[in-house]
Length: 154
Image (cartoon, rainbow, N blue to C red; front, top):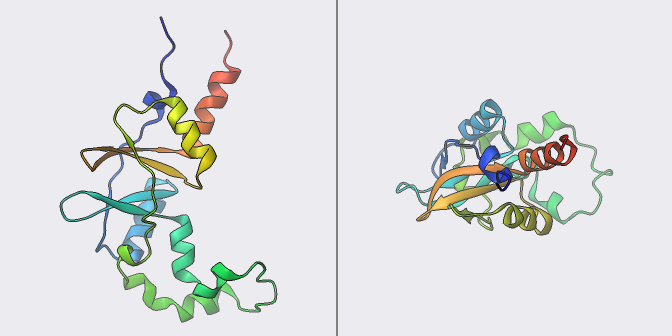
């Protein structure tokens, strides 16, 4: 008998964010569900992108931070940044989502997940069937499951 795929034990069924959902509501869901990101879908339920920790941070801070190699000389506090970008809470998730996502089909393998996590800067991989999200796999869950498999007694 072959061992059970790691991927089948760590798949999470999570809600998707709508592309027109307010940023503040999306962040609240991510915090409540305790995942680093969630898939973003259109009104028909088709996957459009990902919104998570990185996109949220980018929405809160000035755009020029993405071009800086070092921001230690910028003497602003978090409160100042939040005050200046306070209006972002009402912006739609679509304005800030990452559209360069990578997804897998229902027949994905452990090796396919490993390759994606190794070669791409993603925290979650959406699982899709006909363009509709059916679940996600997080990098943290995958890594933990690999460690548990490696350290399990024979």
